[in-house]
Length: 237
Image (tube, rainbow, N blue to C red; front, side, top):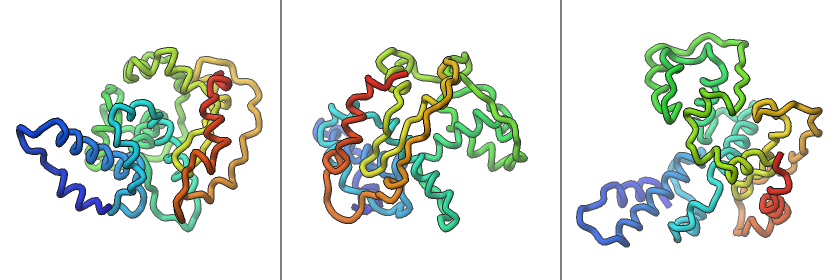
């Protein structure tokens, strides 16, 4: 579907409409949020209809790990842009931007040390006004338990049921994109002592998968990876 049609059709919700109309507009908004912001591609003009099953039942949307899916898409886009033939980077770049300003102090605009939520929300204007800082070799290791980190994290993230999620060495799944959540290689950030990490999982054969070219149900074609995700409780550090 064309993005322009979606935006023109659902740009303004009239007053005093019934609940079903509101839900229809909510579905359209979520589809645009997913396809254009979190999981955007280089076309920037069309929305993929694969999102339709995920917005059919709004009550079920919270059951999916959207954060892990967005992270896998970011990893894949960063891998692709490392190819010298690729000139554009698409992905949820606000995540990458926020991480850069946290870890490389010399890149931070003035005032960044005063934390706000979301962290990257006010950076663009600062960068345009001041210009990019000089490149720095300094890198800050920031364990997730530091007060400066905890104060900008949603309280639910620190609940045991969620901590098990981001402490699991498991796969990250976004349709045909499979990436690996190698938290066993950054144990100091989780408050642990780093052991000799296992060899990184070789998933080069998955890098050529883009999900295009014919209909398929990825939970079947990539079944072994979905099973690994379902059994993540076995891989929590």
